[in-house]
Length: 428
Image (cartoon, rainbow, N blue to C red; front, side, top):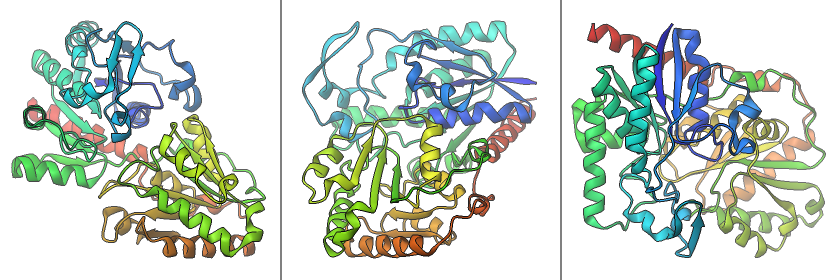
């Protein structure tokens, strides 16, 4: 068994992007000859209610904490909604800091973690025979930690992008100097890493365009996929109400057009008044203030239920017992949840523009339909069609096994292990 150090700032907090991906890699890598060791900034005993290990099972690998520096900017800059308010917020150990400072953070506001993480990673390598390194963003600071460690330990390194970095859609409007510095750091990472893996094709295409063919040739697309273990138990019968689930975050984030979906619900129910007691739309994820605001302005708000952030396993169970899943996205991003919706054998409504990667992917999925987010009439037609089908269909417990060949996290971990193997062979 060979050891790989995985650098993920937010592990095991389910509320952070990249954590499910890290968990699923770490869970399957030992089956392919690689024992992971996770380096994180989070203390295992804190935020237990948000730990993916509580719901999905304990990983049989070391999880080691490098305490973050107090000099970090304590705000999330992963999405535009995180930067909308300029109200000061109090953060333990940092006093009052304005969230607007996030737009000046390079690369992500956690750069103060670099030094303690490199020190901790070096100590880990003295205790264990680390032979490779994997850094997982959207905390790009993780890539800088891995860059320093890989050079210090003389080991191969793979930089994994769960989300885009310098060209993220939520970052426009930053000062030119900040944007330029961010791109220089990104270029350093993709040029220095022996391989680059990305969660969906758009990230890889954009990196190749910015930094040339040499970079493009070392990029591999590794979908986050689904964890097969979450689909082994028989699901319960579908609920009495026609249930549509959105199993993700930021539904009404700027640029997604989620408000048009809520308008479509209102118009659909206006045409079918008797349906109000028979349908329910469930949104699962982090608190979405825009979603709550738009719900308050609906004519039929009681059909929309907004759940708090829940465990990964509970979220998967909710979509498994639903009649239909909704995913929405910006540009050519492919939400990781779509793989779980497909694995569950669900009807899927994707709110995405024609020709997008998501729309093209769903062409090969017989129960998927893509509609532009602003197409209220198209959304109503899909809701009506799936509702009518649900009234006629009988529950089949084998339905969840109709699509076993969709991308799984195990397949992605196997590919990642092969990348590590080839890098060691190249360096021998």
